[in-house]
Image 1 (cartoon, rainbow, N blue to C red):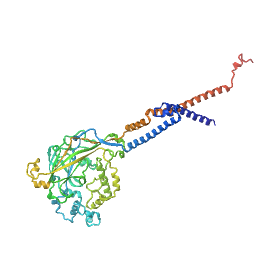
Image 2: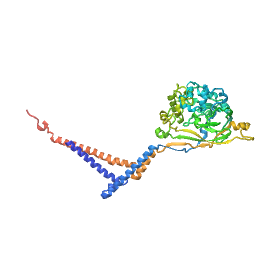
Image 3: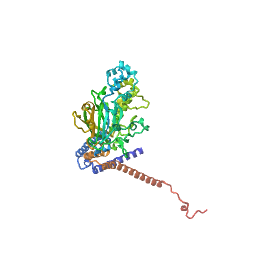
Image 4: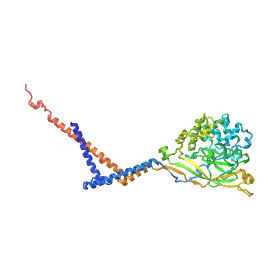
Length: 542
């Protein structure tokens, strides 16, 4: 019963101390309106008015802070224009992939019979019998099952080689042998020629252990480059991927191409010409779907504008799903050495096709070391898988393929005009010495150049950082309530620290008083003991 009474008295003291501190806090605080709530000179309705006003301001402040937080959470990254111009000397000239629309040379494939294995492959390349791919029981599909030809080998052996396609090349005002600049590559459009593209040893993991000499005939050495880190600090005298030395046609890239119209067997489109694709040096070209048409009998100027994506290091602290981009070392691919969104999507589709057909088409990344290249007999399965409307695994994989935080793309504007049809002197002697009929039917000239010597990239930055977030909250709380960091100290001191300190002091003083009383009581009730000398000062006599 005594303990219950003592506990009740402690609560009462704490309540009185809190009430006293609250009154002092209301009089001394800088929060708007609260000093009037604690002013005893005002009437009750006046104090109630200011209390309601403070509550309304507090509710509005909470609502606005909620809106700030939602904006901070939903829009963590903002994309703006980079404040600094970047010179074109610091980025590679675009890699250029050129493909003749003619799939194979007539002089090489006319010897094959239509009912032969090669004839079936030609039908595939020329998109003949395309409707029969929908029917697994068709005669054409039955012939494919016994066909063991490899499409890539057939295309490489029977398509127009780069030596015949490319007649004249000039880069940065210097004329080169085209074979010193270009090399052959198999793409989804067939056999093509690519310029300023990194070799496979730098792009694919399966070629890392290769020891072949990558230096070309005129001494250019490949160097590691990627959009995030750029070129190495130390560069050899001659290297690629190469950068242009300035803007304009004269400092750009010029190539003269021969379509060899008399060798056309079938076109990938509805007419003759070339497909051209501009890409950065680390991305495998997708010419079939995204290539630009360069018409024969015309000279086409492609004016290039650079689009570069950059990011500040501060957004690394934001999760990938929120910032919607990936840094170079954050996602590892199976086949490609360097991450890009296109490379990631290619691997996703390759995984889907391998699961469906147990092989990989020749123009897809070899994501598994033991995976076999699809033969002609696998074409039906591959076509069905590519046309499938339901690809849940592929779609799920593609969602993980976010854009790179650092990226480099090239946008081309084309300006074609016809080649000369009459005899007069021309700027290019090679073109001028050709007959006008041959120019009209076979030749295409292409000029690729930069419009400006500098460009401004797109910079990804933190939209609302922690400093801005706290500033916005502090501004709203200061505007509506007069709140500051010192207000937190006042609340903590007057409503928590001061009552607890007084309670502890009170308990300590109560304990000391109780000890004093207890000692006094013991002294009063303690029996007094007399010494023998006090009782018998003269001693005891026996």
